[in-house]
Length: 165
Image 1 (tube, helix red, strand yellow):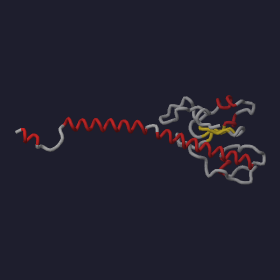
Image 2 (tube, rainbow, N blue to C red):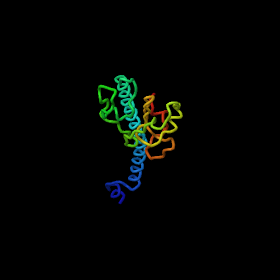
Image 3 (tube, rainbow, N blue to C red):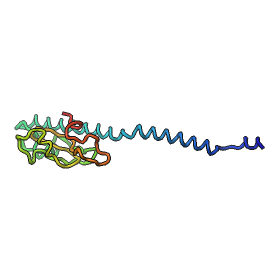
């Protein structure tokens, strides 16, 4: 009878459970390893978009007859600016990878030119997309520090992580 049990083919329940537990542990390690990769790629994309916009702003200013930044970011791609010969500097406003928005909040729309940078930053509204200050040429990701949207960047401040300058 013992020889018949030894000749049986297949796995016991204990062996199957051990294999399942080992596979579960390996899957948990792999998932934990790549969980932050999505956020890191979004941050990298966001920083690249900021560099592109900043470069376009500087090119606009260099070509501007008044040596100033455009009144709004739309002037970079719509060709609506009147004080530059070349009308387009961007194909389109890049999309914010965290919120999937290319909305632009104009910082200078309701501010006094005498406001300092901190006063201007404190008056920004909206979430996602970009904030643009046409007086100084500053552009950055537009997030509230109280934003709790799932998948939003951990640092949602105006200029610490996503301003670059």
